[in-house]
Image 1 (spheres, rainbow, N blue to C red):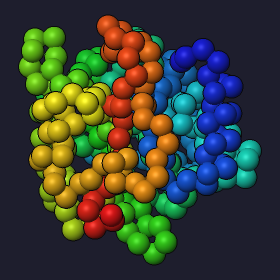
Image 2: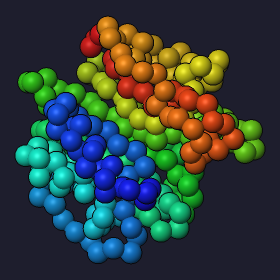
Image 3: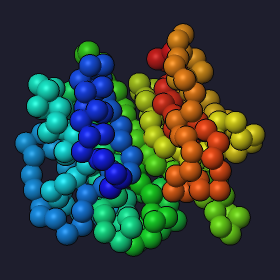
Image 4: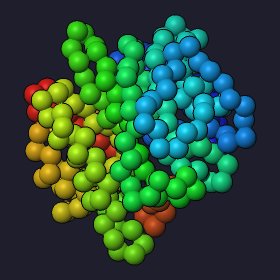
Length: 241
């Protein structure tokens, strides 16, 4: 966990409570591997999990949900582990929603080995909001190319497309950390827009937007650069634009 995590969770919860978001997607959601197994009355266990890791005390999303409850904001939530992180955390994805959801895990990587940080899944949740049905996807993808110059992201996105192409008539929102810069020509960002023409980048089509970068400075995975980058996106189906 990062420094001052408790303070930052309180700050995040306050923002969510103030903005009153209907759906929230979180990536790199950790929980200590050695903590005790817990339950939560609004936790929804996803189906087709690749690695059957139970919910544990200290789960970041769980702590956030409890902080929101303290602020009188109540969310249903789902979480699933992708892989082991830093040899001491179960690292995964979470989706929070004001209404119940039906969630499913879809593997998109070359491997499903839990010890391998290259194991990547996406979460797919069916949610009904304002009497309209939505398909919410959440993913944490790899870089465009790996250490052996292989196109990791392309493989992952190609597998994610299978689920997307089966639901092109649905109201789709795909959120996540794509680990690909919007400004990098002919790489991951361009590949998403090229291969899924029914999706649009909500940032570029919004009537108003605030800021640009979603990552600033050096972080794990981007330690060779200090530039600000836009690598996190919310893609929406054209029928919503």
